[in-house]
Amino acid sequence: MYVKTTPSDAMKKYLFLLLFFFVFLNGCMEREIYTEITQPSFIAHPPAALHIDDISGILKSDFKNDSNALLHLEVYTHCANCTNVQSHSIGTDFDGYIRITVKDVNTTIARAQMDYKGKADAQKIQHVYEHLMKELRWK
Image (cartoon, rainbow, N blue to C red; front, side, top):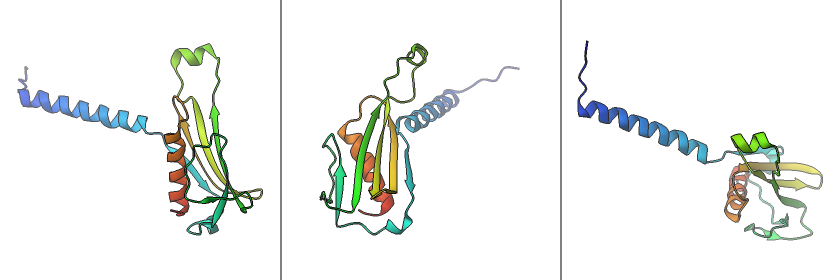
């Protein structure tokens, strides 16, 4: 038995597939930021100042950067230097990661981490920082 499809049926299928791939690819392009708050008592209680350890010097923060501050904010970027031939042939999910950690002396208060593809540029670092500040309700 032959079922004749109308142009509108074919168009609906095409639009559905297009929408499906757009949603799928959009979800793959936005990297997830993993956040852990180990000291919930700091939520919604921002400090007056932070000692910001950012070797790159590109992080923009609203907090006063004070070397005598009790809380330290560390910006760490890791670039994966993989030389495995198999990894290069099939590709990898990320080229490195960005981790921002807030510490009180030796105790971790909170941290956020995001894998990245390409380079760890200022926009990606700032994005992870803003996400952590939002989770801590310090902004």
